[in-house]
Structures are given as C-alpha cells and as structure tokens.
Image (cartoon, rainbow, N blue to C red; front, side, top):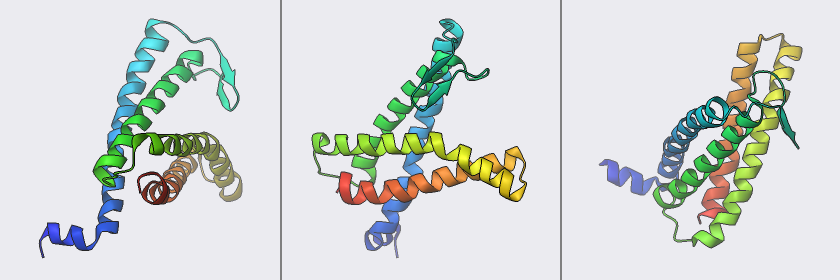
Length: 164
C-alpha cells in the first residue's frame, strides 16, 4: 500500500498527524518573535517597568516587565495567526470562509492562552506538594499537561467547528 493510499484510507489519523507536526510552524514563529520582541522591547527600548493587567503579571524580577508582556503578546498573536492559516489550509483543507472561522479560532486561541498561563502554576504546585517532585520535573509535567490539553481541546474544535 502506498503512502498516498494510506493517507486517503486513514484521513482522520493523517489529519491528526499533520495537525501536530504542522503546529510546530507556529511554535517556530513564536520563538522567533519572542527573540525579536525581547531584543526590541526589552533591550533596545528598555521597557522593563513592572506591568500587571488582569491575569498577566510581569511585575516580578526576571519577567522583563512591560517589555516581557509586549514580547509575549506579539509573539502569541503572530503564532496564532500563522497557526490559523496552517490548520485551515494545510491540515483540514477547509473551504469554510475566513470570516466565519476567524472569530471561532480567536475564541479558541484566547482560551488556550489563558489555560497555558494559569494551569502550569497549579500543576507544578500539585506535583511538588502532593508528590514531593523538584521544580524541574514538576515544571516539565506542567508543560506536558498544557500541551496535551491544548491538543485534546484544539483538534476536535478545529476539525468539527472551525475548519469543518
């Protein structure tokens, strides 16, 4: 059986594989934008004054203050825009209009960003307090939990609601 035949016969599995592999394009976008943002907002412009807004707390030392927040914001928005187009056209080959899909994807992206900001603290604390894990292992488990949750939530919402 050829690869093409296999992908046609197992379209759902193939979409899931493409979803996970091609999501790395947005990850690369996020990393590049974060490096550029830090160079611009933190190093060049010196926007390191403490910043706190809603659930975003960039007031502690080492968070780079306002520059850290702007770096996060720009990198995340650009990564999500890239991911939207990658998922719509390359993974799900959606014929759904961008106008109809974009607002749905924006809701999904905001949900995932909020969960990614809030969940790690709870998972890390749970691992350390309940199982006595060190910071490195508990942070790794929190990162894995975040990633798995994002996949479990994102894939079906993209497939059946956003990019149908």
